Amino acid sequence: MELGDFYYRQGYKIVEKSIIFAINHFRLISLNCRKIKVLFILKFEIVKNILDGIPHTPPEDGLLLYNFILKSKPSKILELGFQHGVSTLYMAAALDEIGFGEIITIDRQSALHENPSIETLLNKSGLNQYVKAIYANYSYTWELMKIIRDNSTNQNEQILFDFCFIDGAHNWETDGFSFFLVDKLLNDGAFILFDDVYWTYSKSEGLKNTDFVKQMSIDEKNTPQVELILKLLVAQRENYSILSVNERWAWVQKIDNRNKIIQSDFESLFIQTSIKSDIKKLLKKIKSKLTK
Image 1: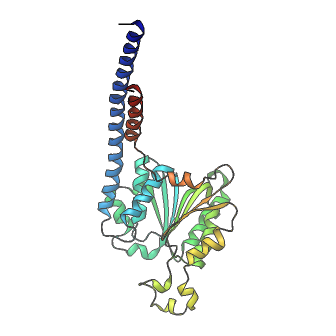
Image 2: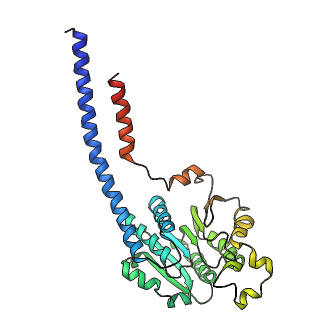
Image 3: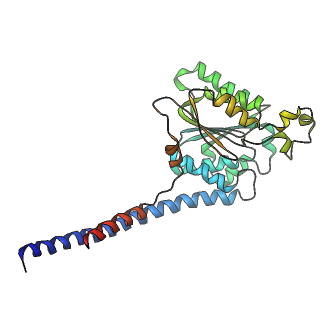
């Protein structure tokens, strides 16, 4: 056997052993990652089962919220409108997963009489420690005023939020004003999620036949007012970027030059990657080159 051929074979054996070691090593990593992912899924599934049949956030939307919280890791969340607290619980479950965070959620006094109530669901899920529910007499705009007022008088301990979910009135008067109030309470880089972008009073089964709606003009009944807020208020603010709009939700970010994210970065918050798959592809390429 020639000396060069001997060294080639020895070198190949070393590479081969290294590949086997890498495969076994990354199998262990992949197994641990799978276990972690399973734990995440189990936490979501537990909350999903508790919320089964309760409106108005379907599980697929709940999973988007859950994953967003896991990825963005907000320390303080503001929610405007909770009713039963379904979306609140999905977010609280994610906070429990990352191990920190608080949700301040606001709705009207009528939410106290929902069946089930947010308090019932929080007790059932054991997620009470992450949620502070506030019951407004008339509107959450007054409660937002109180937070702004307290921040103004206590500069050292201001309450500022990293994420706000607006899912309450869905009208120009309340949520248009709320956008400006919320702006005063957001950290730079924070996100706002608007729900029911194309909702209208005329299509609302629960409201369209009420005296309140009957007194409205035709265009006020038929116009998606959250969409108006996005077009006429949010889009015209230089420090806000509309990241994504679909048939139900609009994602918005408060920005400056230091924390502005591009569309692909935002979408990556929801992309699930597989370490196992990437490693397999890499090892396959290495092995194919060595056997040529």
